[in-house]
Amino acid sequence: MRRTKIVASLGPATDDESVLRGIIRAGVDVARINLSHGSVDDGMDRYEAVRRIAREEGRHVGILADLPGPKVRVAAFAEESVFDEGDRVRLVVGSESSSAKVIEVDYPQLASSFAPGDRVVIGDGRLVLEVNAVGDDLDATVINSGVLTGSPGVHVPADKLAMSTPTPHDLKLLDAMVDVGVDMVAVSFVRSAHDMRRVGTEPHPRGPLLVAKVETRAAIENLDGIIEASGAIMVARGDLGNELPIEDLPITQKEIIRRCIAGGKPVITATQMLESMISAPAPTRAEASDVANAVWDGTSAVMLSGETAVGIDPVNCVRTMGRIARKADDVFDHEAWARNVAALRMTESGSGTEVTDAMTVAGWRACRELEVSAVLCISGTGFTVRQMARFRPQAQILGLSTDERTLQQLTMSWGTTPVLLPTAGTREEMMAEALKVAASEGHVRSGEQVALLGGDGVGAKVTNNLRIVTVP
Image (cartoon, rainbow, N blue to C red; front, side):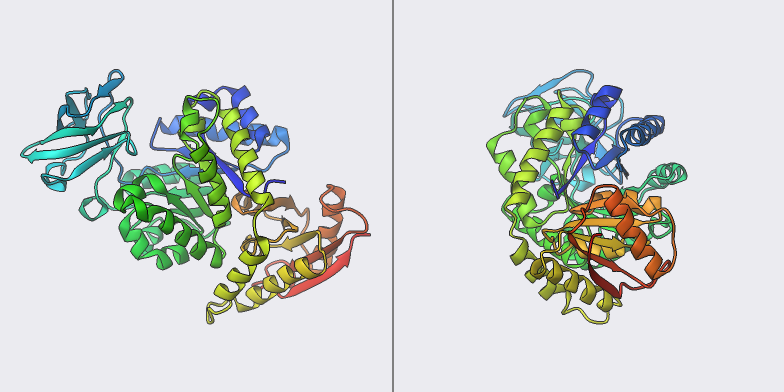
């Protein structure tokens, strides 16, 4: 069983129903709707298609709406444009069209955001220019060859970006997606916890689980506050790699993951994971190693972007990602990871979660010492499940809830199988029902030893009950 979750981006390549059904069958846990591309109607059509097919397939598939944020983009290229090293290019303010000679950038502060000698990175590094002179526009030289199509983004350093997050356009998109019941929302170019608070949705699970995209230097400096204000984190390595020296990016990725999981927050590793599979049938060896290393870093989920949105074979991409992640899961050092997390988290007193911390540590120890095959976490909001998942136990984790929205949000949590509890009740009633449902759906078998973890019944504020029982 693969424990690390897969997030797959939707796009033109998955609009064919057979392809969308194929990637869901191949193991997609969360479908990402990138609202930077296409219309709101396109996003809604994809949302409805995922919901319908997931129901037909009997699967819980979470839906993540990714807000554009203050993204600066170039005007669309009328045709594929080739840039050779040494070519001179003008960058001007505009939104009509771009070519290999003149690139229009839809950002009025373009000239004030760059100085001679600065580099302009376009399309997550597909083209890099060096600024020669600044006037009303930018005169620049191509310093690496590249090909651009569509309307790629331009990286503007976060400390010079004259737009805040979320933008008014983000909030309009957010309203539309919240109205239909989207499970998760990713907020782009977050620089502080205040940016997350400005989103203004109800706390999850009543509202969507908010995912902060860490892609600016300011976000790294304010990371603890952002983690605290968010439901999950995405390591968005494209723009983050432009903000930091490239040699610092792998170290920073590991540190973000470590701090998120210690706090019980799911974390997604994203950008260029299997990039070559946009046009090739197999990944490079380096890409395969990148996915495996993200798993060993402790990431909750790995994400496919253009590979599934516009790639030649989205289903193959998901299957390939699944094989790599599953193999990496098999050799993951569960014991060392859990000891480190227990030491990190239990030193943080006064957080209001000490009881749940203690009970989930006990649950992990039971898994290790008593050969427990599964941990049945009963939770209204998903908090208990996420706290248990941070220990990465070898036992399977069942996230049981009466709230369908909670189950959809748990699709992002490492190692967690969402299971619906038909009715709420007292502690005794819910624990008995959890054991019954888990057995009837084939998650546990008669004679196995399992752990039951939960509170004092529906609406419980803390997890204060742990039982080790044998499945009848």
